[in-house]
Image 1 (spheres, rainbow, N blue to C red):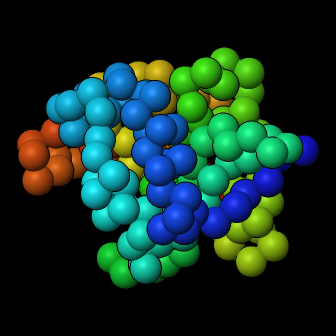
Image 2: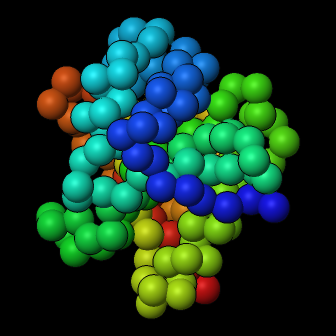
Length: 154
């Protein structure tokens, strides 16, 4: 059974291991292969977002981070779904998204948005396969293309 568990200060080291297993993502996102515990604390201890582990039975297989209401557009934003590299290719990312979407529907959410780096074609295919539609492209502060997607929840 898959479920979510809150990331705490005491479990940040597990999130670090999951993030650092994804070298390609880290290079896309930050220009480096690995992140520090301080980086992970800044990302997942942010009071504005909800950060959870994706667990399969008793095994930590990924992380998920989301914002219930972005102050810029008043919409919920999915910030990250990341599966440990050892567990990729088994459909766990899609399953985790389905759990997240179900939780959002229970909360009365009508649509979800996300942004991703333009060169991450694998992620674009993944989100398209889950019903997300492209909205627009913008440049971030580092002049990287960010593609924005949205899904209307059934």
